[in-house]
Each structure stands twice: as C-alpha cells, then as structure tokens.
Length: 191
Image (cartoon, rainbow, N blue to C red; front, side, top):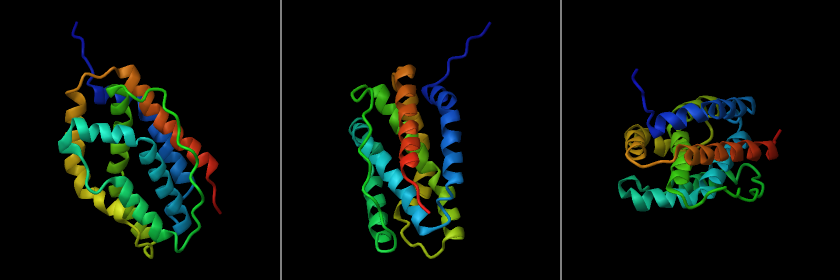
C-alpha cells in the first residue's frame, strides 16, 4: 500500500475549496462588475483583506525577498479607490479582523495563499470589468497582476511547498480570510 503525502498547497486547496467557491458565488450574486459602485465594493474588499493581512505579506517579503512586491498591491488598490472616489461614495472601512494566530509562519502561509490566489483571479476580472463597465479606468490593481501572476504564482507555491507548514494552522488562517471576506460583504450592501 502506497501512502501519498499531500503538499501544503494541495492541503490548503482541498480544505479551502468550498470557502473559495462560496466567495466566488457571493461576489457573482452581488454583481460587483456591473457598475462603478459595485467595482468600488470589490476594491474595498481587496483593500480590507490586504490591509488586514499586511503582517503576513510583510513576513513573506522578509523571508522570501524574491516575492516582495513593488509597488505593493495594497497601494495599487488605494490608488484605484482614490480615482473612483470622484465618481462613487466610498464608506468608511470596517475594523480589521483579529486573526487567531499572528506569529506562526504557517498562519502567514495560510493568509498569503488566499491573497496570492485572489491576485491570480484578477486576470479574469479585468476582462469582465472592461466588458461590463468600460468607462472605468481605475484598473491599476487588476492591470498590474495578469502578467505578474502567471510568473509569480508558481514561485509562491514553490516557496510554500518547500516550507515546513503545520497544515491545521495554515488552513485555519486561510479560512479566517475567507470568513473575513464574507463578513465584509455582509456588512457592505449597495443599490
């Protein structure tokens, strides 16, 4: 009998797939890419998640300098939000979530996995945005990621899989990010 050991990425993917699909469905139901106001909610969500996970993203840059970002994704999102602010009202952001584990490298990997995965999805979202609301030009975040993501994601996964990761801690941290996203969207409605 052969025992197959899953990589950290495979463990995270298997454990978070239902949460990922729920979030995708929730974003689709809200039709965030059909109006500038909806798009601003999407950008607010991305800013909220990146700001709340800044410590993990900093940890990644410090421990894996080849994965550091310049400019930061968070700054690109802020620039897009500032541009959109002329056209839509952006409410004050909710308070940032409190993560159950803020110091463990495994927890950092869990949050990084979700955020880097969200950047991968930007390729599809940029096409959707341009098709649905072509008048929106605040696309620094979505535009900066497509080429970068194709090269970056394999490097992130390679670093993740080469690390000693406690799967329970990483999975818990990743699921907390998805939960924070759902909570943010629950609080944020628009018409």
